[in-house]
Image 1 (cartoon, helix red, strand yellow):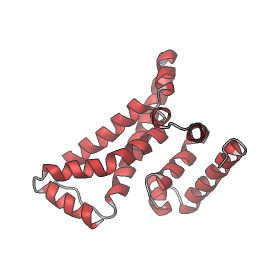
Image 2 (image 1 turned 60 degrees about the horizontal axis):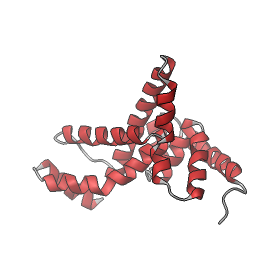
Image 3 (image 1 turned 90 degrees about the vertical axis):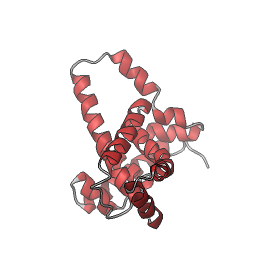
Image 4 (image 1 turned 180 degrees about the vertical axis):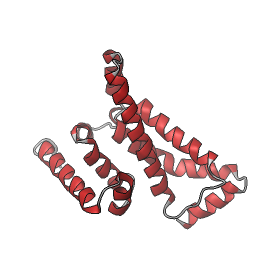
Length: 181
């Protein structure tokens, strides 16, 4: 966290290498997070790129109150949620279904995951309701605490903990017998 504060200070004072260090440090994790939330490689890349662009644009007024990774993960979750809404609207408006199927088949999660066990886990994760999937991904990949997730989802901590528990239970029951250690 101290390193992040130093990098932010350097970046605010014109250090382009500081932004590169921030990007290199968090881009891969944020891409994984967006990929798990959207199950769309191109959409995940767009979300992460947009988050970093907005971060750069707001650096002069930006004040870090917690962890930088948590802040960026929250931004990615919000952008992913916006992307999901846009996709639903497009789908309702009659987007070409073949084009959408191609996008889903080439999703970031399926391209990034090489082992068969992780592919099964990935498929099971995408079958969860979005709220449960978001809590699990933010907790495990975004390293956010339940309190932060509750604030992001505008719900109680108990609800977030329940979504996490129910989501994990569904994953366990789906994968029971399929994934061997």
